[in-house]
Image 1 (cartoon, helix red, strand yellow):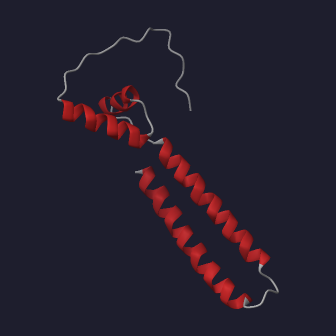
Image 2 (cartoon, one colour):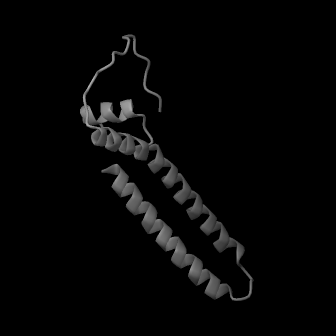
Image 3 (cartoon, rainbow, N blue to C red):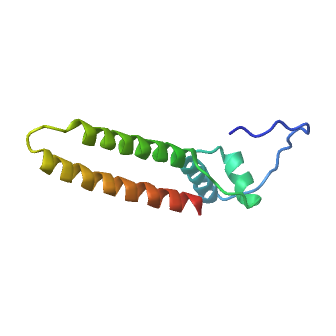
Length: 108
């Protein structure tokens, strides 16, 4: 979601950091899928950091969840249907647990 346009012009803010600190901040911003400015702004203003990466992972897990359900519907009448159904249900259960855990951890 894009931030609303502001009528006030943005002003720069100069801070002095050690090279190591600067690199850590860059890495953390990158991991969160944010620019360094956005990352520092969110940290300084105690705003939650909801990374783009997290949203992408959640979307991929949801896709896998849907594909797994689809496979369960498609195996009717196949040889070894019961074994396939058992394995697919196990994977579906693990995906459900992973998605629930992921959603809980990103909500905190």
